[in-house]
Image 1 (cartoon, helix red, strand yellow):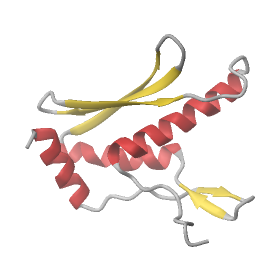
Image 2 (image 1 turned 120 degrees about the vertical axis):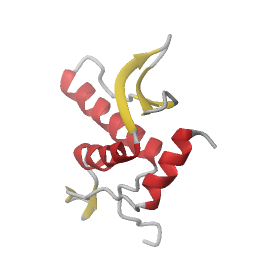
Image 3 (image 1 turned 45 degrees about the horizontal axis):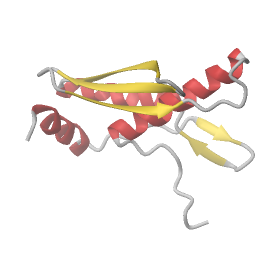
Image 4 (image 1 turned 30 degrees about the horizontal axis):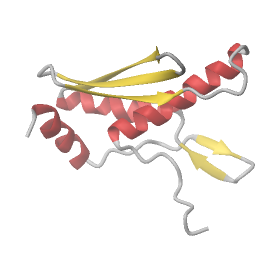
Length: 120
């Protein structure tokens, strides 16, 4: 097992969870904001794990690339697409980037960030 996997397992065994400070009045639900997810993921630094996120491109799309780094030099990375209805509107693009960062980081670290509403 890699050093990164060992450290990630140790961090996950501490049962980290993200706060749910965001509120959606339309659905009367709560969710984890980007800051909530970042705060939770940063707790992995105690196990030698940190992350970076940046905007990345290929021929056709924009992505947020999330990289999980370990003190040993090992790393994992994934990309989450940036989807915006209007790429010429900076505010809409900013919202789309924030959304991709939140979900990319949540997926990379395995952080649940929404109330489970499957039973509804």
